[in-house]
Length: 422
Image (cartoon, rainbow, N blue to C red; front, side, top):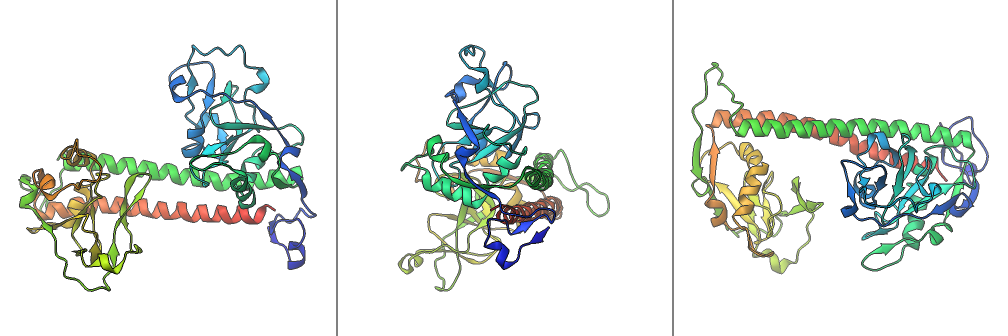
């Protein structure tokens, strides 16, 4: 690829371009290329994943799980229930390859207008569903996949955000969408761009698959280790002693120390998608000086019960700092390998057990130390604790490395979209 000179950048051409192409891209509006077809309004109650003759693309799946280039052979897509009468639906209103399915409703600007391009239907009958716009490139020839990437570029996304209307829920109309400005290259250049970006997407899909596989493997290993189905031996090949079972209050004490200096970092637990994120200590929380006096001291190795309303177990602190008095801070009373309990407290069954201690309590109530202290904890001796933690930590290192690769690739793709389109 070649980057254009400063003079060339003034023209309607991309910054980054394959060397065999030149000249300006065509300036059009969305409606110069796409026509619109009606969509259905079936809710999740009208869908199932077992049987049916027609599948349905639901806007919620576009939001959270479908790839931008939609291949039905690779995506879990629900059927419409058999009792629905399809005879009134025109054959032309079924999805076709190269159609764009665009979300027309969202609670935030990040997802309004999010779209997929259908690249393979595998000869299956598919309809676009609730809160979607079905756009078909009938007025101008388009290369397969190009439209899907076109809808991701920043200039198009900004225009969609500007034309979206609403307060609590944003909406996007096909009429307004038809008026947004876009730039189109020749078909051969479209094909080259779409092919190149699809290779990047394939690499990202492989990394995501590897990430999910490792997460699943880790979950299985955790289950086997903490159920004692899988045990380590000591350096002499001898079995470790039996595990102990003790109430949590015998192992951890609640910390309320408020003696600190104003320059200590303020820590908090952040959230991702309504759940507490792993290793999610936030170092940039802003708070008034008047509130700081009531803040609790946290030391490295302490544990923090997450949030007033239970949302994810207990977090481990890697640093010293202070945090809101809303949190319950736990400090070990005996010698433990803290990394062992870091994993122990994030297990699904422990989270459920801790959650059950506050069942029926309304939002806004803390999970108290007494709730936690009444639970029984099971643990091996220190050497086996260390072996378990090191095993799981090594898996985490691999997951972190893949996560970094995914983030880097996402940034690379974002830069490509910015430079390869006008």
